[in-house]
Image (cartoon, rainbow, N blue to C red; front, side):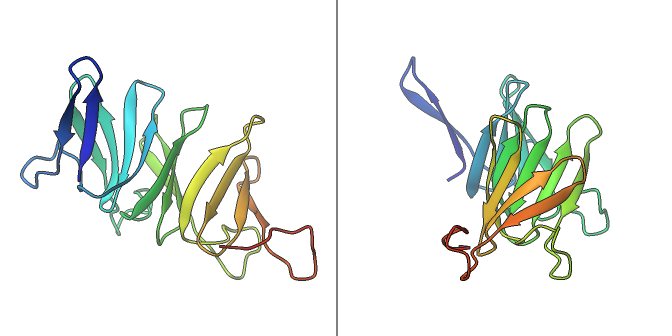
Length: 173
């Protein structure tokens, strides 16, 4: 429940819990993903949004979906968080695909599955994010396969199971 920080010197935990009266606490006690940021901070994905934990001040900055703002987090149901080498934070959600957060501008770009666009994200359930040694971003999730992101075109390359191709992905889920 919440976020726990272990101090290896005194062998004790410090617990960080959601307090509805304090906006500097974590947005929800159900934590799904943690990623160490490039500025000595932590990115924490919860059932109620994305949080950036400032280790020096022991406070959280919350990023929550605003349905009236297309440049906000795509969904509050965050399942995966990853910061790439350029400092961009990628957020996989359970139900609204992928969000890209630029810490410099403070804006989100959202990507969702479009059944009519083969170059869109293959699923709106993203649970894994990784980059390979060449800096290529890979995403995986619920029943859509594995997706590779082309940064130049901002399009996705889908790698999915094909019954007629024995060298394809073994399963989409």
